[in-house]
Image (cartoon, rainbow, N blue to C red):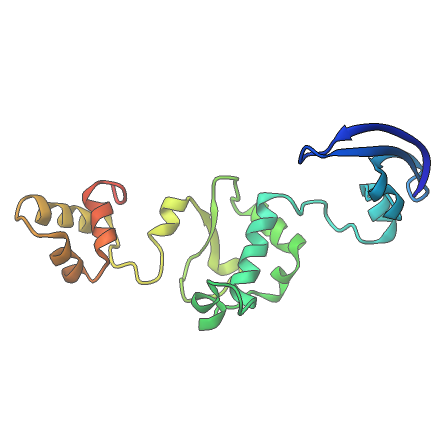
Length: 195
């Protein structure tokens, strides 16, 4: 970009004083304000018009929640360095070829009940990420579907509460009987889950 004129000194987002300038972006034919050090280094202003002209602009949704869901899904399945990989890609879960690109995934999600308060859910927990095996659920509904979850319905949770209150079972005894953690038993007894 080409410097048109120097502007005043302003504080950046970290509170440091920086000199600003007015620059001409030859790609989108606009004047843009930038910090002097950035403006002198940048080739273009990075606006949608500039990026689109260069062919790098795909969808403009990289900062959306749905895009993060897609990125996280791919990380769990494809990145062996991801902490959750062992529970997904490490045990054979895959993503259908269509969803390796964001636009087809986004279109499927928007046509199949995606909302900002929902999470992606695999219907068959041992199945792959693909249209026939996925839907969207609330975090609470989704947590009930986790692999290894032994409590399958509210009736079982109520049985745990009754054994604890009426018969005096300890949390440790209940955890052993239902083959779940003491922490989960505590959450059930204190009506934090399965209420």
